[in-house]
Length: 338
Ligand code: 5AD
Figure 1 (cartoon, rainbow, N blue to C red):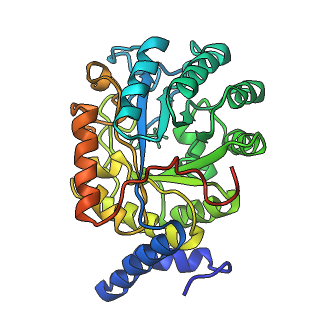
Figure 2: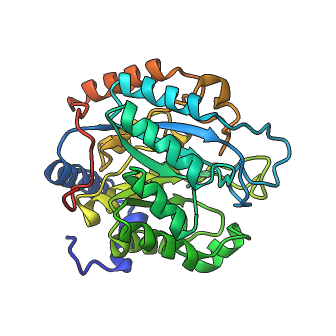
């Protein structure tokens, strides 16, 4: 049904499929592929949203620089390390450091934080801090960062330009290539249901994930934020996002795919469903609760006021009910030796 020659047309067919029996087949194939290629383990990646300052104006994102109604915050290095330690004590074997594009955290600051986390906790470190010069990526890799997430968001160049007035698609892809060549395990991803996005665009996104040969793919539905230029547009469909997850699993096979918070926000059962159609990663939020409400990428973010302990306990129960173990390993890429 699927192979290396699978075309964009075939993917589009699945994204538009209306036959319930065929869809069941899709979910089953995605779940089988997940089991065969990455196993039953669910990896916990504790995410620390350490700054909501951003120099960019991505049209969909509540952190965009033009949103003057947002109270901005920056966590200190000590707060970040403390949060990482707490996450590690709860069983997270990866700490994800995510922020807006905030140059206050220059390479030197970031390197100090990475070194401290790597020496004080037994974890892998993933960065999700946007586009930086190659030299900075190199310094942070040398400091011990293992992975980097930089979603391309949409493959449609015209839509990318419209939604990212101060960014460039080719630049983003060049950053991903640079990160790969520096030895980072890299992640891309997209937003499903952006205004103006077509089914063809989504098929191209999936084919680009494959072409980029990334180690991780994050997929979530668009959720409109009232203080952005996309205020008032319809949200993306969570069911369509699940199809993109399933097809990405089937076509890329051994990548790590999170059941994203955006999915959990648009459908309370979204995470559970994602874990059954391709996803094998969950990213509990381990940001100190006092900062949570201010990291408002989109509104009503799921679990945004739940403590890390409760959040992780709930994820453990969810894994148990799926009869899937929580991994005790780092959950590095399965594509090559690390
Ligand atoms: N809806 C859905 N996802 C969003 N992101 C940012 N804003 C939104 C939104 N309004 C996603 C982007 C980014 C990640 C951190 O959050 O894909 O890469």
